[in-house]
Amino acid sequence: MADSAETRELPTQTRRNLLDTMELDTRLLGMIGAFVIICIVFDVWTGGRFLTPRNIFNLTIQTVSVAIMATGMVFVIVTRHIDLSVGALLATCSAIMAMFQTLVMPQWFGIDLGSPLIAPLTIMVGLVVGCFIGAFHGWLIGFLTIPAFIVTLGGLFVWRNVAWHLTAGQTIGPLDPGFVALGGIDGTLGVTGSWVFGALASAFTLYLLFSARRNKIAHRFTVKPLWAEFVIGGILVGAILGLVWILNSYEIPIGRLKREFAERGDVLPSGYTEAYGVPYSVLILIAVATVMTIVAQRTRLGRYIFATGGNPEAAALSGINTRLLTVKIFAIVGALCAISAVVASARQNFHSNDIGTLDELRVIAAAVIGGTALAGGVGTIYGAILGALIMQSLQSGMAMVGVEAPYQNIVVGIVLVLAVYVDIVYRKKTGD
Image (cartoon, rainbow, N blue to C red; front, side):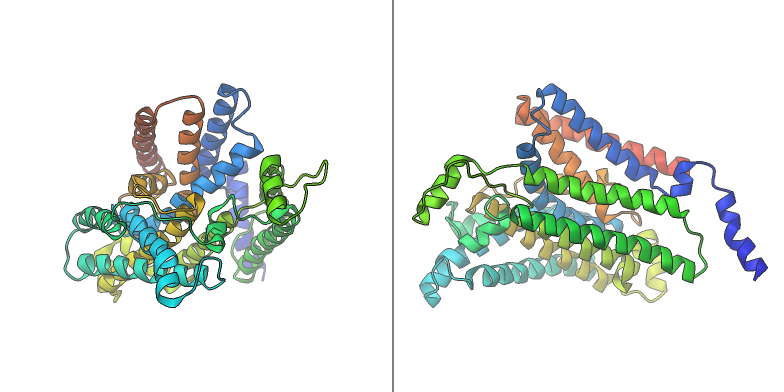
């Protein structure tokens, strides 16, 4: 027993600084620091308009679509592939779902917009289409051994124009109200629901934190000091409740409240106010991120993905069916493109011909900025989401100060190259 205790205490004694003691990811801290700097710079530059509840609310719902696809792009890049078709696939899924709810359901089945069946059936159709197209890409790459770059570049041209063909280049809308509620501004939890969500999310976060500590102790692994666990837990809870507080601070405009009350046949009471709260689209992103993180860290599929990315030849020799694995990965990405199509088209309340344009570049940039290595084998879901948030913050901030779109893209390109260079330097320094 004495030997076991000495073995467990030894790693604690060799920790050199506070970061080592708290076991913090320096790459993650760097990204958070970059995000904070971006927010502060643009807030000062815009005279305090960037960090207002209204802009943060808009920033969150604008980030969701790209962030959802970026979680799938992590798996693609980790296995040393690339997917250039995600934006075009989003457009195809969006076109099919828009036509399904505005044309197919009313004319073929007599189910008009407003029916509770419209939204779930539409989403199911979109998921089937996205998953099938993604699996087809994976089959071409895995079993026919066509390079992913070529397959998905072809997919970019094919599916973008399939979307145009299906709609004849027309805008399709308005969409079903239940479907539109998933886009952000037309569907939120409200103040009370948001605080309930914040409390549940905080409790779940603390449970995961201390459950992981308990499992480490049970398996005789080194653990952080208890005070470090409380500090990290406090920071996470503070971030969750802080975001809820900010989103609850964005009040619905009086004009919109008057219209809503008038539609119900009521009159807006004097002095009445109401806030948006947490959007449903953010809840969708949280659910996707949770599932993808579990897949990456707790399932056989996740272990196979990272093993294949680290050394494809060794993975194949160890018995992993890398061809079928490729099909599964691209099917997952296809399903995520369909979910992103739901969020993107619902936020606009219509399907447009240019929906998802250049999203493939934003998604790849988000994953790479978030720390996913192009050489394969390394990447995190939370890093990709943070990368998407940094990208959207840059674009939103530049738009607010009057920078034109071409110059915005120049800045994003520079940031992407710089992020890859920093990642290369970091890996050389740490020996990863």
